[in-house]
Length: 165
Image (cartoon, rainbow, N blue to C red; front, side, top):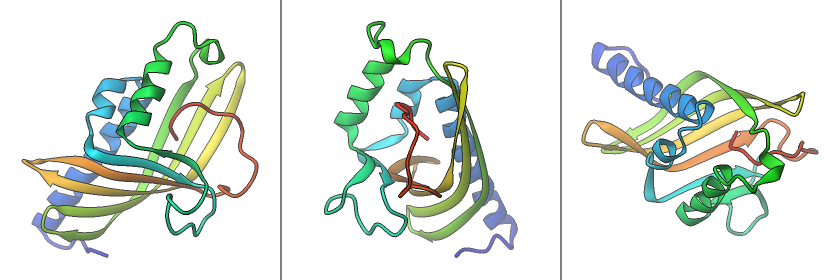
């Protein structure tokens, strides 16, 4: 774990935090193209189906999407014939406890806690857990190589949701 004990470390932590806050806002504001552009070409979004799941390839996941699968899901979001998304759910993401776990060269691993409230058809759903972002520091900004969303109750019954926690 990296300690933010000097000005340079604090500024770096601030940059990382602002990136995570901006990403959450893009999701809440439905800025899908901007959000998709945050990922590297090989970037993945992964929500494990068990708390200690070691990988998304050899085990079933709640979500495991590469660039192509994200494009398919995001295209569905704007399709007027996607009746299951009418009206489109509203969300609010809260990010806290941001910790830089490692920073070697351009590679940065960040963990944080999240709470996402989804309001859909007069019903709120809560999704809570921990994010692990594997970021690449590129030219003063970050790209997501992998975003892992570990729900606290990932191995329990989940409400139906088509959006990203």
